[in-house]
Length: 251
Picture 1 (cartoon, rainbow, N blue to C red):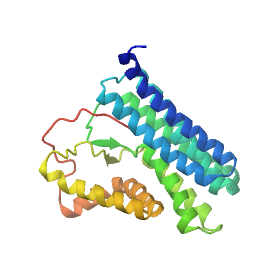
Picture 2: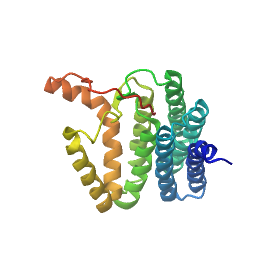
Picture 3: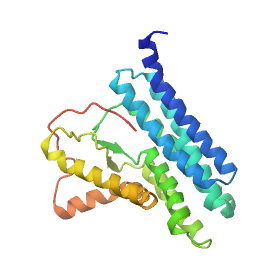
């Protein structure tokens, strides 16, 4: 096999690793290993980020890769977190709990289908609706946070998780705009503050990973609805133009 052909295979191999991590999360849930399932979802997110980045860096993006990535994401960030949240918190709710999980998985699938249909059109600085991996990240980090720190009571947990799952499902298919952070260019001087912030976040993750990761994912999930309100209060326009063109596309 030529080196060039191998380069074309690497993004698909990374996507397959994403699929493996999602499948492992499902198997872990079946064995009541919710902690391992949550960690597997975070690992799947890493592979999901790497496959697209590698494909763009090596100029090996393809329609096949896009479709394969979306199909895998349905499993890793739709079905797997849905099964996790049902077994961990909603199974006692019977059919109603099942309906809520179905809503989450269906909205994740619709969100991914909408992204594919848009085919990179629109403003690449923002996402339309909460990205599916981010919604799965909220669920995974909540499981970790609860296991190590929060420890929700049996009476409180099902109701809170039910509401949270429905909110995440709505945010995924909504038209609420979320920052993609793709217009950040660390080569520009004014972005140095973001580099400092990234270092501080890494330090917090190292010091208190369960709390910090949950705050980051949950904070991003609520940032979409809250940002227009904050900007309106501060009287700043939404979506100020950037000085360079951004062609990068991602869920």
